[in-house]
Image (cartoon, rainbow, N blue to C red; front, side, top):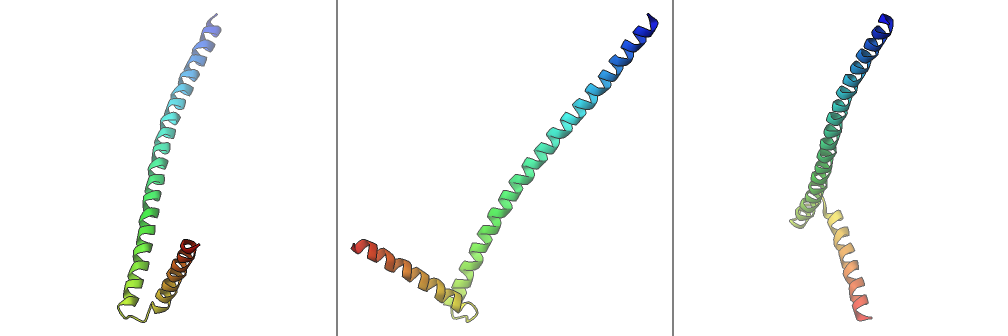
Length: 96
């Protein structure tokens, strides 16, 4: 009978340790999930900032070319020609 009690106590002890390990791992998982969520949100914010910065750079290049700088004149001319083509297409569609 003593052996059976000892085995049961041993099992209870092991189960208790397993439950404790499970709880620690579950808390760790929640922590990692929260960190992952924060990193994803930061990534989205950085990508939006990058897009905004790229747009600002393009706008500044165009403004610089319009002010007489020769560095970005070709790009600006191509952009203006593209805009003129779009306007022409709109005029054609309106006249139909």
